Image (cartoon, rainbow, N blue to C red):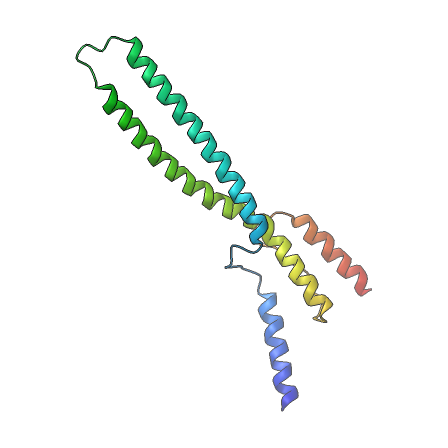
Length: 154
């Protein structure tokens, strides 16, 4: 009876693994992904601040060199530009964070999967080809690793 239960468990595990691999955990290597995303966010924020200051100086220079007879109030225009840039900065910051998370996952995910597969093989699990998700980087490493497994089986 115990053997039957073990056989069923092994069969279920194998079938579950053969169905493909879809990850729902996006932070698989927090150190790498955090550094990657942080670097992108710092760079993006620095560029946005630089653009903001540059435009603020440009608008101030325009208002001081052009005679504004009954035109716009320089302070209200400056306030409008500040609000516009803050909104743009927050939106862009969120988009860069999400994009960095997705991109870093496409890099760290395959490495995480390969490491897990190698650990399973070391622990005695049946060696089977490793599969990465469509769109992941390092597909060639998976192919090379699978070739190695085939060669070792012979």
